[in-house]
Image (cartoon, rainbow, N blue to C red):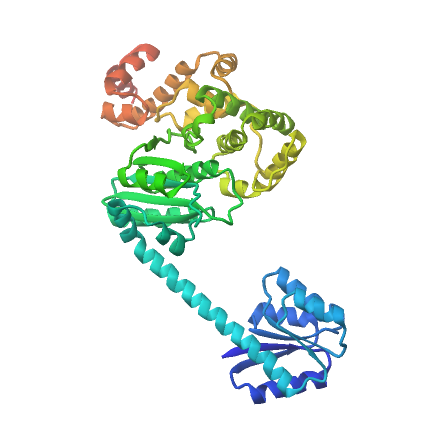
Length: 500
């Protein structure tokens, strides 16, 4: 059964069309009428009719303008245009916006029937194509694990990848292999894979298998993907997946990868033998994987990358987008991949909770030159870092806040300096000027303060207190306690007991 909307401002023609369609087309269970474009829009939004019968000469917004608006809003149905004027420009405009038929008034029964039958045939063809597509998708999902296991045993079959999953027929690939070894059972691994798929599928065709706690994933960029370069895309989505994995399982496991592969033979060799796979680690407190190994031989040294990232973050903290653009422009002239990746790392470091996928999407179309990059940065700032996102004016305040909230984790002056976007030497000088003490002493005092709070609450297990407060052992805690407070933990407990 189908639905139809008649958009006609004159009552008599509208009623005649309604009667004609109701008498000759029992398959229409829902026929509605609208006397203007405004009324039609309301009914279309509410009921989404299958077929529109639209008069061109409507008051206010014309029928053609209505169809153009619907097309812009992805609400276009199968449309039949009616008019009393046989003008070429009307017919041409109707064709350009994808109308299925163009009928001159007065409309004969035979003409109307042919136009409506044409629309119904196209609707059924579309439904059939959708059913086939859904069936193919079900078949692809079902066959994936068995196909990958067969590939591992007998080698890749390019025709299966080309016909079933849309991989390139000319043999030119930019594919990757991702191997994720976890401590999870297969059902938990499968749930993890399902949660990761939306992260990858906007940019890549994905073929995956779960077996014995290991995820094996083949990735090939989609032809329609606007994101490039592909290695940065792979690094970004792998970082997001690793972060999501840690959030769900509290453990990264062992993440190994290789690529991009330029042809099926290269991919087949690595996939079958798992040779040449690199291991990626996500350091504590860092929201992204280190991208150096993802970017190949032209990558900057790790030290230089760290310094550049710190410089960009510092410009963000100062609110100096023009100076950040200058830094990025100089990097771009050497290596565009490095520039994009360092910017993403800097944004992630500056605001770890930033929706980096949304940022990535608005980076798809870039403009060159330092002024273009500055405009681009301003766009990112306005879209994704709202007015409520305050620029930290003091990096030391940020560092102290990190130390107060993450004191139980392994922390170093170098890691905190990088996180706030400063070189270690500059950070060390600023920290001493601001606090009057060096980093390690302040961190020790923070940890001891929290240890005292646990002791005051009656906690008796010294090793557990040490673990909760960032010390390697109860003995090490006691040694530092004595050094700072001049008495042991046991003596402190006795004194507190005497006071109570």
